[in-house]
Length: 554
Image (tube, rainbow, N blue to C red; front, side):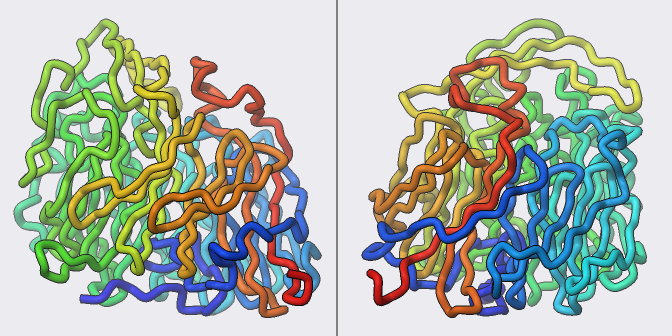
């Protein structure tokens, strides 16, 4: 079965991951390995607020849409007159309404509907729909309650006439869920919880083998504050009519009060698009004790495994392992380490269940030292890219370990419910960051590029065979998709945790855009060795646009 096609709008970028499959693979090929070293700045736009700009802009119908960190303004720019503001949307919440969010103020992006609607997630729990031409608010719904610690840091997904959105707050003992709304009027159609009874999890006949697990794998009533929030990327298959999403770590992060597998936290879930009913679930970390949620993107890729074509879901987990699953059934096809792992000795190749080892669980009270990877994961929220041309997935990784100190937690609404604290440490080797080319058909690293600091931004791959990514110490780089050889680098005004994207402008030329601005978990890191000396979450946000010189000037 073929994966969903690339962008249905040639040369445009209508959703954060570009296409329903989440590939971030652009068919544009004007920028090539032969001319990439001629890229130069064309224009820039100064963002109205500082903070972590994680997601790139959307480009649709000759308009670029930017999403800022909190207070989550939306700015529409006219690409016929680059940098000219068409309209600005200011959400009806002030700085005083800023909730406490473990992820900080970061913004990952927007979603767009062909009816001319732009959807904006707002940190204090709202999802708003805007008229794409005027910026006028069409509707707004409350999707999460920040008084309980629930916020929105994820990107909406448009799937047919639905718009889906998750929520954040596992760290506060919030119970996670995914919600589907009617795209044109905001009517709630279904809400599927991560934990609890089957009526909440929507585990019906289509997932008979999963019935009851949202409760039975927890101590009595512990699932009610069990975490597993849905604050990562969403993908969907228009043919199978299924949506795929990850879930966060269980709460509290000290595992001793919640013995059991704690389903469906730290899991990859497939749901029926129309009803939200669970089709299948795959848990990456049973009884997660280290904060290894599975919020990262689930890329839909068509692969050949053992000589047979297979429609798959590919996921690089925070826990250090990369998974290839059968898209229709959730059956594990491939699992291998993607970097240094010592919290377990291995995982079962058939079930994916971690093999229990001395470091499988920390003590109820005490300190465990040198656990790899760190709680931020071998891979954070930055999105990978997959090229159908090479069959490789390009993933931005972090090489960090940690010391963990556990204490017995106390649940107070709206306050962190962790029972654990961490000290981040450099991982083995000289590189704290890595860009890898992962072969998901066999579970192998084909090449990798070491970076001095953790990679926090997303990846772009193009049909011309280039992989673009930005670094926290201020470089935008292009490497060869086949071998990782560096083709070009460009000094940025600041570090970036943004995701590069590319588009065709009204002049018919291909451009590269990258948001700049830092924030989020690294600003809280207590080990200075894991972030650049120039780190600052107060740097003003900015969009940088680069292009090739006109043909006559090359």
